[in-house]
Amino acid sequence: MRRLRLERAGEPAARRYEALGRVMAALTRDAETFESCRDLSWWRGGDQSWHIEWRDGPYARELADLIAARILPEAPVTAAGPPSATQATLDVMGVLFVLRAVDPLGRARLSRPSLWRLRDALDTTRRTPSPQPWERLLGNG
Image (cartoon, rainbow, N blue to C red; front, side, top):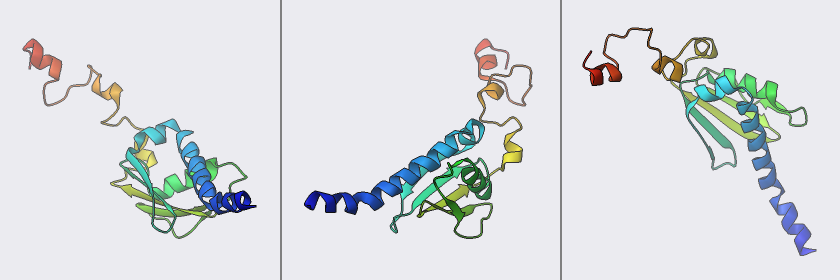
């Protein structure tokens, strides 16, 4: 009988972690968007909510729409407040998620080549005002 009480006491914590897993799985389904979220971090808030924060990448409302569209139907997702470019709040399976974008670029801008992409760093056809590191090594810069 005591074991049954402990399992019931752990149900809210299990639901919170299941909701986090579903949100993170929804984020990773779109590799381009996921990779554009630099410095992605998440932590549990004092009110048992989850906070997800990233630098650059999509606007918070865009990421909230992506999460809502990609989460499985068994996990109900609703907006818990009006979204903005820098902050959105979602209710996933009864667990609150606060999404916060720091210096967002927006998904429209992500489709163009970005400065942090490896292909841009290795593109030797594009001239830049400053010499490339290999040009300095070869004495051409």
